Length: 140
Image (cartoon, rainbow, N blue to C red; front, side, top):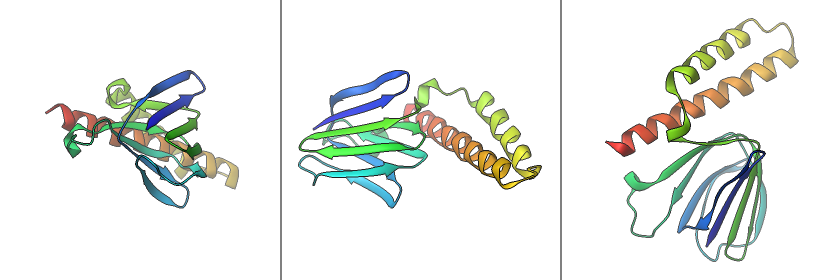
């Protein structure tokens, strides 16, 4: 099946894969060839990609994504998100500092709008750090 991972900045992936694990709004889903047609919302989380059926868990590629839309039809999976970062693109020290700023922002929020924004940032940076850690483990 073909995976298209598309961000506001352009196409991240457009190639054949065996399996894609997507953080959907109603729970994580694993998509294999000949999956039932589906349109759903993706939530901020980790997309994991198994390129070949024989790839082990250690060979999975991981991307930190923000929420978006998932469309599965035939042998095509299209994921449209604002951002998607591969583990190799994430600078851990910058993400850790951004997470700490977001946590401080959350703790000091004066209203519901500030609190919601802070929670989104905390989630985003926590996912980025998780993907960076998965990438680090994969290399070793």
